Length: 311
Figure 1 (cartoon, rainbow, N blue to C red):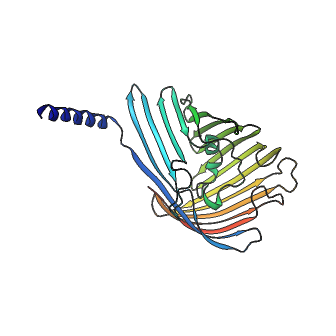
Figure 2 (figure 1 turned 90 degrees about the vertical axis):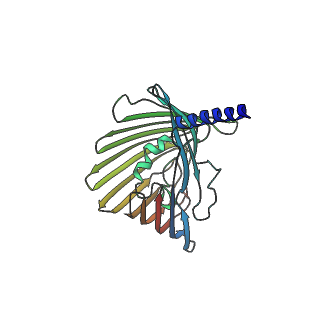
């Protein structure tokens, strides 16, 4: 009995020491819901509740000594209007990584760094989610079965990352390369993605001038929406006044390859009121004018009000 008690005490001590050696796991997330009046094509307008990429996540990191760290990110997307999973449970992100002076190696399921470096910065009003998300941007590549390397910052403010995603008998392998550079009020980015014959290259600039923020990106893609090349441009501006934010952005997509009537535009006006650093109420009006070729779905408009809470 004494031996068993001693053994249990030793195991408890070892378990306690192991737990103390690890960093605290962080629970985080976002609930983002809008009530909208939507009109698609010639159909009658409808009133809907819309989920705007609500999510729940876990992340943690352990210091292994000598500057080496190991970590993970698990992120679950869900529909806040129904409580249902948006995809597989950890479908938004599930990765493990090692980081040190040599940079960072990531492996698992995660989104395109090229997209985050370019279009994500310019859609400031609702984080490129929901019905006002950028519908004209060309997204190329796979998010699953990926390996990525983020280089150490050789120049202050510069980050560079590349990734490759595993292919299959029915799906081409994809490649992704992104760079971000910050110099005070100037934020620059570039991204390139390729999957088989489909590819895209984009560059982005953001400039903060007091209460004003101006952003823009230009993208050139091939064989994404149609066979052939296409140019895509988006401009955005934000003005802050106390807790209020006033947003406007306009996107213009040129002709895709030889497809007639494939030009399209999208514009959004938005207003955000920040109740705190984590919570806001907001409204927007967004409109997509699709060409007769209907490469982006159809003409669409929505008038929306919503609540977003981060935790």
